[in-house]
Image (cartoon, rainbow, N blue to C red; front, side, top):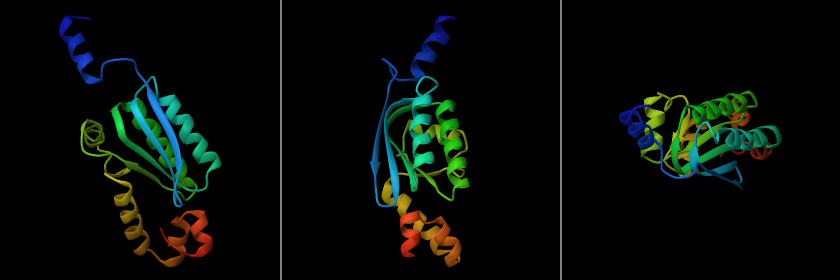
Length: 156
């Protein structure tokens, strides 16, 4: 590898050891996975494992909070797209919190902003969800609500 390629490669990801922090938090309407560090080829399996547990054993929508993520690559995008597909089959949703910055730019360049539900905050995700449920017939909206709220007949 020549010197110029080496410099470019180093500038694309943060310096230091590759790490991913994953913390799970439950909200009344969603399971929230708060991530920190880097989501790349080396850490994507850990993210996939956390999402898999929520998809298999949870009954709520899932929100992935990327506010403390410094870097994401195609392996991370692949995991998020797979999780969205699996959740949709169960009538659940995946939301992503991602503020403006380099990580959001990856979603923009990948043209995934319309494919994935990405917002700058949990409040914004909730607002969008309420608007999307309000425009649907009652039975369809109830199917889109988290299971705990379906029984009560409420929306998010």
